[in-house]
Amino acid sequence: MSSEVIKQLQEAVQFSPENVPLRLHLAQVLLQDFQYQQAEEQYRKVLELSHDNIPAQLGLARTFYHQTKYSVAIVVLEQLEHQDPDNFDALLLHCRILVRENSMEAARDMYQHLLALNPGFRDEALDGYFRMPQQQSAPSLDDEEEEVEKIFTLEKPEINFGDVGGMEREKQEIDLKIIKPLQFPDLYKAYGKKAGGGILLYGPPGCGKTYLARATAGQIQAEFINVGIHDVLDMWIGNSEKNLHSLFELARQSKPCVLFFDEVDALGANRSSMRNSGASHLINQFLSEMDGIAANNDNVLIIGATNAPWSLDPAFRRPGRFDRIVFVAPPDQESREEVLRIQLRNKPVEAIDYRAIAKATAGYSGADLKAIVDLAIEDKLMEALQKGIPQPITQKDLMKATKTHRATTREWFNTARNYALYSNEAGLYDDVLKYLDIKK
Ligand SMILES: Nc1ncnc2c1ncn2[C@@H]1O[C@H](COP(=O)(O)OP(=O)(O)OP(=O)(O)O)[C@@H](O)[C@H]1O
Ligand SMILES: [Mg+2]
Image 1 (cartoon, rainbow, N blue to C red):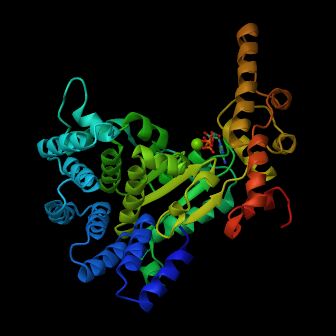
Image 2: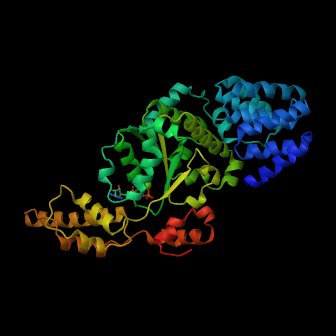
Image 3: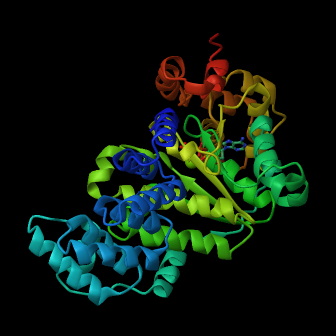
């Protein structure tokens, strides 16, 4: 949704403030655009002008729902249902809220009512509760939090920035955007800089996104929670929203904490197809949890990673969400040297010309370099087993391994180049162009 449309509608509404359909439209657009508070305000104004307006009541309830103000949402819905007892959308929303509030019996009755109104209706989440072959009641939130804790382990990473070769630009971005605000909150406040928001790391596979996120936690001795979005989607089809909430709660309780979302594009991809399946609620939930962190962000740092930033819905990049996006490039010559040194640290090596190997491995990712070292070590191990004498790793072994293992980043750049050239809005992919040495 473009902010331009919203602006125009706002102007139109200012011009004819009593125009109910117009204001209603503005409210709807704001709601779709996740601007719940503004939407709420507009719906309220519509209701001032037109008391019994059903779409406005429903819309208002929705804005409450998304702001997790469940009890007010229910008040509005009950009034609506009084006027229009078989309003399907209202009942469905009401049912979802009851589930959230753990009022399972009332929710079940309402679900049955929904099915009576529309026998073909299916909702994965609600089905999960009420249609399972062996009926089980929903777990209470406490159980769930335990469940979440079992699945997402808190870890205290041993590595820090010192273990990350090169990546000076990336480290600096992280430092300025999330570490410094944590260390000097008052200073940031004094300059009117709001802390909060997250960093989104993107780039070809194996170039250290996950590794850097983990090292960030280690750098500030924070807890680290590694969340694969696919896990969230797979594991809890039907119950993901609640689990997502518990996950953010877990992070808030474990401060300081780096909450790392891997494959974050899985959430933002195909939003229109997800909307039908009911998973769009999961997206909304994710965004509002993130906004919640922004509002009360003390000591929870959010880092996301993706190989496909172009699949991510722009709503994710709004201020307070992933508002800094950082390209994680394959390591340059110097960084490759450093990565190799780090990988070979504490291993038996002969004098090695790191520069020469780094030169021979342009375009290799950190993971590729690790693969080379592993290959060389395996070779040496075999040799040592055969000869019975351990041998140090040599330059020759490593060079030989570079011939066997080739860079794996090329394919990614083939795709990224197209996005960078043809849909580079707001210079989002300028760093990719720079890396590829393409002039704009
Ligand atoms: N700068 C670096 N310094 C040291 N090791 C590195 C560096 N970059 C990558 N590595 C090594 O490469 C491995 C793979 O990196 P990582 O898993 O972080 O890549 P990624 O960008 O998250 O990849 P993917 O997109 O596939 O998830 C790391 O576990 C680490 O051992
Ligand atoms: Mg990764």
